[in-house]
Image 1 (tube, rainbow, N blue to C red):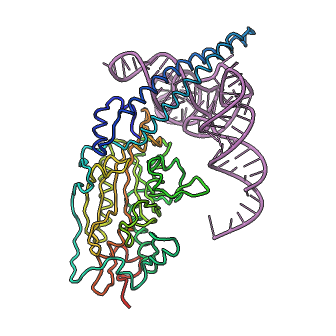
Image 2 (image 1 turned 90 degrees about the horizontal axis):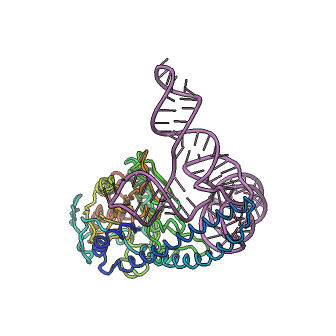
Image 3 (image 1 turned 120 degrees about the vertical axis):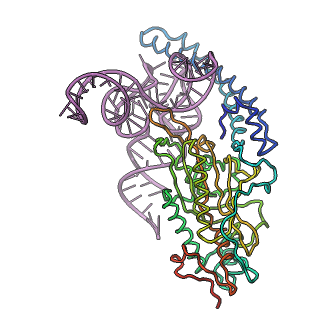
Length: 423
RNA sequence: GGAGAGGUGACCGAGAGGCCGAAGGUGAUCGCCUGCUAAGCGAUUGAGUGCUCAAAAAGUGCUCCGAGGGUUCGAAUCCCUCCCUCUCCGCCA
């Protein structure tokens, strides 16, 4: 959520920044509602002040044993008037909140302004591009002979869009997650295993709600939702918390499954692991003071980059165009790995600076000693998602016989240096 | 799922219709005292939001005692619904 006061005081600047993301955004309605609301609110507060005075007068009279009837009569009259004004104020406020909640965060000046997703800015390319003396297969073809990625099996259990890992793939997936979780802990993130089900407030704070309710799975009999990302759980660790200034930055990392309805994406990228209703990742979140945010943003990117580099993958780092930013982000940098079999880049990590947008919704604050409490800034990034990492590993390290060399860091988890051996 | 007990400021805890943003304590900050430390003494110490103000400071209004409704001239206090925590029972990995 944006700072209403800022929008009020800098409407032109704010609107310009918002229109970089979506040219259809206008602040006119918001500002009109704001001034209407504040006008009525002023009246409400005057009436309340009067009511409080009258109440005190009644109390005094009663205590002194005087007759309070005339004061009570005055109060009764006041009440009706106040109630009417309050209803009006509530209505304006509700409409104002609707508009305010729909507005995305302001975009960082470094974000390329465009309405075309392809206008991202490529920051750098890293790792090494694998050379093949044969036509590389994609991860589905590679695992078909062994049945270790069993999509028909998953469909039987759950329907389309789910994955079932077996044997070596199960070990590899689990190993990847364990290794990355450990790497995150070694880098100073507190390891967290959170619930996969969260309540409405949590999704509201991290900003999936109210705008993107349709993307999230909801339980039928309880007010609980499956997390679309553990950003939700990690960010909400800070909800209604006031951190001590010296405890910041506070880094947390979770490994979880993530659930997405992917409504409206039927028929798109349906092959293999890359877009399923459930996938795993390690997620990193940092709470910090505003001036620490940009350095920590680079830190998360560097961490994710180190992961893909250690696995011997070819990758690039791109800054997303303004139209492609998530609602809560001021800036997002993606790390994409090259998948030689699918012959395309896939996002394995998305690192976002959310400034105070989530903190304002969730009351995530900090206080330096002697100072007033202020809103934290929140940052998040994947570190990283296995649903794209696993395909990239298989496709990059495949051999002409269909086997796959296991990257060094994972060998201990899988128990061998080469998997997917034929026969 | 059943039965009970609770949810008050950073924390503990009183408060049982009006003078309660809330006693008392702990902690924190500042000062005094002490050779230093401890102890002691005194003072200060919640959040949000509006207005005045160029701004800061200050002043001032409103709101907040788990959440939401209700009763009442008036609710932390009474009633209803919900949420959460704890204890016991049942069920269960």
